[in-house]
Amino acid sequence: MKITINDLYNLDETIAKKLFEGATYPWEVLPKIKEFIIELGKTLDKDEYEEISENVWVAKSAKVAPTAFIAGPAIIGKNAEVRHCAFIRGSAIVGENSVVGNSTELKNVVLFNNVQVPHYNYVGDSILGYKSHMGAGSITSNVKSDKKLVIVKNGDEKIETGLKKFGAMIGDNVEVGCGSVLNPGTVVGRNTNIYPLSSVRGTIAENSIYKNQGEIVNKH
Image (cartoon, rainbow, N blue to C red):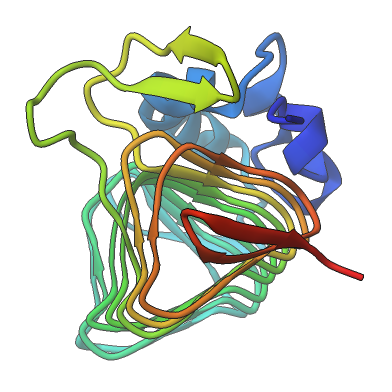
């Protein structure tokens, strides 16, 4: 299945385009997010972004609730909305026009532009593509129960990532249903829908409807 960076993401829809240079698979950039944000933040236009605390840059057009918590390093993009009691733990890029909702927690993530994680979501060690949306209560699980390194299973192929913490790589225009769990090492192709209350693992092809592990159908 198609699981490379170019298969999953439109890199013109993120301020982090350069982060992906030289990488083949998107999870390769997870260990680089923190330092990338620190370097990128220093270059942001001061007319458009304000450094509100150490290594936390917020676009002046963004809306951030006074009850939200943002630890650095972090970049909150133009016209983004960070709602009441959002918890951004650091190493997070929130794309333009994106929504980080009530009680949503982010850690070591890149949200492309127009991403919505609006209600009680946990997103850690993950990358969410352009216009992807996580329904209420859906989360990325980013550590295996046995604490072993995450392996991406793509058909018969097993790709060793060398990462202990790896949530999900979610392609552009993916809809994740309410209450779903994306298990460590999940990769979801573009334009795919995940049914509510799903437990998802492995790779899911683009343009699919995921009903359960044994029933994944192509969109017509």
